[in-house]
Amino acid sequence: MTKFRHVLVLVIFFLGITNVFSQKITSQPVVKPSEGKALVYITRSNGAMMVNFRVYDKDLFIGALEYGNYFLYECEPGQHLFWAASENRDFVEANLEANKVYVIDLEARMGAFIAAIAVVPQNPKEKRHRKMFYRTVKKETSILKFQSKLTSQDKESNIIAALEKYKDLKQNNSTKIMVLNPDMNFENADKPE
Image (tube, rainbow, N blue to C red; front, side, top):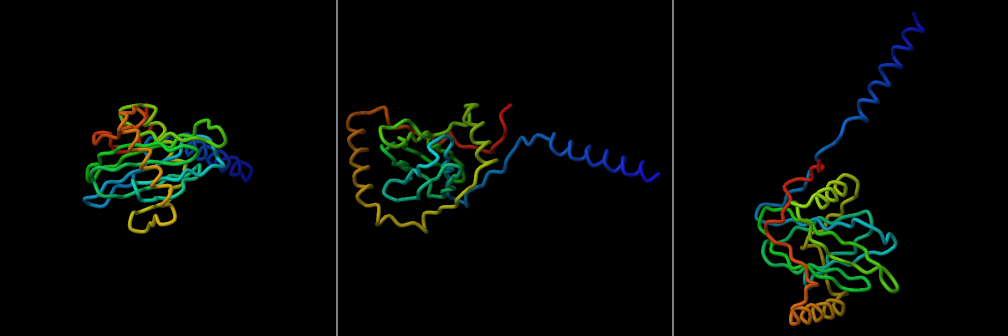
């Protein structure tokens, strides 16, 4: 009888383990903004593991984002200019609505000496963007960053140069500036089917 009991316990154990690992998680929780605020997930989806990208909201330094992390940046709704710097500077004009969640991805690109960067607004209507956001929220580590705790004093020369570059791009009607529209907000981080 003892041998039978051991076999029964092992069978139940392996069935339980199989059941746990076979369940598919199809939704990940999304942090919601405080009432009257907008929330932006700033993610890193690909390569350049040794390079930290410096992220800004116009003249405010948000922080350096490492590979495998993302920021949760809560801010006032309205017009914002998000940009990041590495070997280059890349820009996204954003119009954010209150109580909404948006996603901007920092993509590493081939650079001459170190990785270049592309700042790409994510659209919940595109399957690959939903898939990337689901994977990021599921696997990566977040770093909470809020405007009230940040300073930009030591980044002043970088900010001035970037805003001059942005001004030049705008004057030349450049297509290099991406746009994040108010309707590009994410309700959840569901796994695309």
